[in-house]
Image (cartoon, helix red, strand yellow):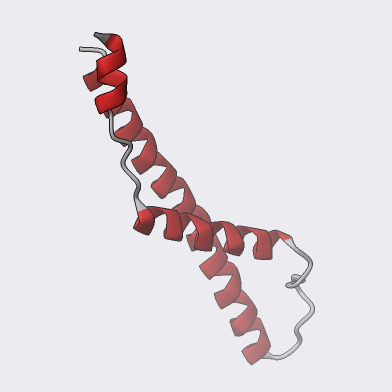
Length: 84
């Protein structure tokens, strides 16, 4: 009976969530790389651009963790339903 249940289990693929995760990971890597060094700009405009980039990369970190939480919840729900 367990073998039939495993064969009937269909794994869901969330392409949109995978795309968000990929973009978020690229932003996180870009943030941690030496591409943007903090405090090297002298004008107000350059500082505003630097601040905007840093804030957008912080958003990508938050988006990554939210997408991971979504996938964990779906995984736990599927595991609970399969154990019933």
